[in-house]
Amino acid sequence: MNIRDFIKELASLTDGEPFFTGVPDSLLKPLCDYLYSKYGVEGNHIVAANEGNAAAIAAGYHLATGRVPVVYMQNSGEGNIVNPAASLLNERVYAIPVLFIVGWRGEPGVHDEPQHIYQGMITLKLLEDLEIEPFVLTKETSEEELAAFLEKAKTRAKEGRSSAIVVKKGALQNEESARYGNGCSLLREEIVCRIAAVAGEDPVVSTTGKASRELFEIREHAGEGHGKDFLTVGSMGHSSSIALGIALQKPATKIWCIDGDGAAVMHMGAMAVIGARDPQNLVHIVINNGAHETVGGMPTAAGKIDLCKIAEGCGYRLVMRAESYEELDEKLLAAKESEVLTFLEVRCGLGARADLGRPTTTARQNKEDFVAFLGQKG
Image (cartoon, rainbow, N blue to C red):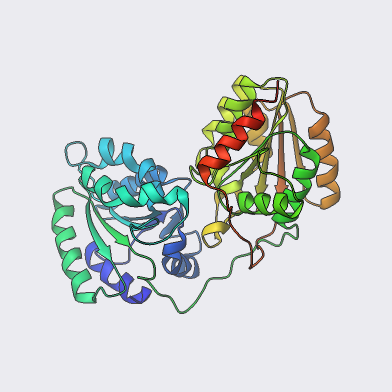
């Protein structure tokens, strides 16, 4: 379905131009590109920190206007909406209606990455358990079928009940792609390569998305194994917490966390917990390109905030920023020699190799190899 026809149909439920908030998804790229081209990140469009945050923003919008808001997300974000969906939106509580648009990664019968398989299996059931009625949008869905569902959703909304459009791969099309950029020249893959070189034999925890894919290929090209690295292929926003759990149990070993700005913002409270526990052996690096690049390039809030000041406020002892390769090399050596909790923000441009591959090992194999490697550490 063409994205403009899709938006036109949504207006019948939202009583005019829809209000959108959410977290980008690759299957929803036609929608995300449309929203960015039309609004940027202003007006009727807010890129949220996480999906639960989006649901709460949507609730506020409804309280102020009485209209039905739209929350878009990948199905992996369903876990983040469970609390607000059950304890805020549900008709037994405040009866706040929301229309969710959900990209269906890991759809049964469609090949996808391992972190999406189980989530794909339970996508519809989880929505139904939350009493959010789903409608599956496919390439074959007609405007009349969508209109009929939205009419039903409008009736549900008057009763304070939410609905969801679950979007299959290729169901939405947009002839125009939005252009994303930030003016920074550093390449993430080169940054990851330099981190890996300085980390040496230290364990590395890397965040979901292209950073982990690049780290895997860097090890492959160097002829190294992958036991030193825990690739957090799913669970966006939690790599720094995983690194904290490891660092506290391996106090004699330097632990490196390669994080992304979207992931760091998604669960920023983790930085407060890290700072409060103050592990002297943890290096937390956030590669900040101000974008959700892995799922298209839509901006994150990290492009407009000072992550270093946040880290300082959370209690990190050594806080640094790098905006050139020379600064990066200098700061990485300082992190290597540091004996205090360290934070490093690296400003980065958008872009990755067109032939960037994916890990060829399974998630379980990665875990087992990493556990064996950690077992050799003090």
